[in-house]
Amino acid sequence: MRIIEAARKKLRLEEDKIYVNLDKYGNMSSASIPVAIDEAYKKSLFKKGDIVLLVAFGAGLTWGSALLRWNKWEV
Image 1 (tube, helix red, strand yellow):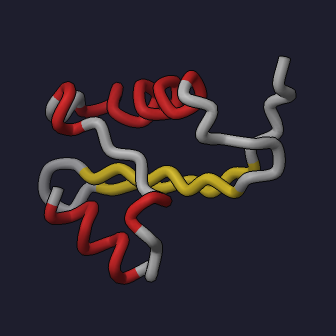
Image 2 (tube, one colour):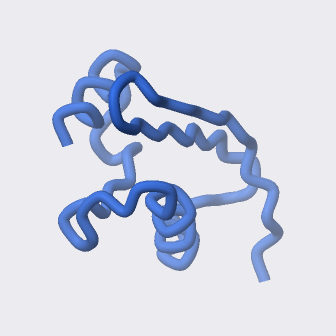
């Protein structure tokens, strides 16, 4: 959670712009992002055209990120 909070502050994002489920599942390694996307989608937190930043941190200095525009049509 410290890493997430530090990144949020560095990016100057409001707390409500970050989706976190660590309290529910803990660190799920490679499943963390897909599970978080699924939960956020089911809670209708995304709308068409939103820009979504995905960031993951691993052991040592391992990290990855992707920036995407949400284009899922709502049914």
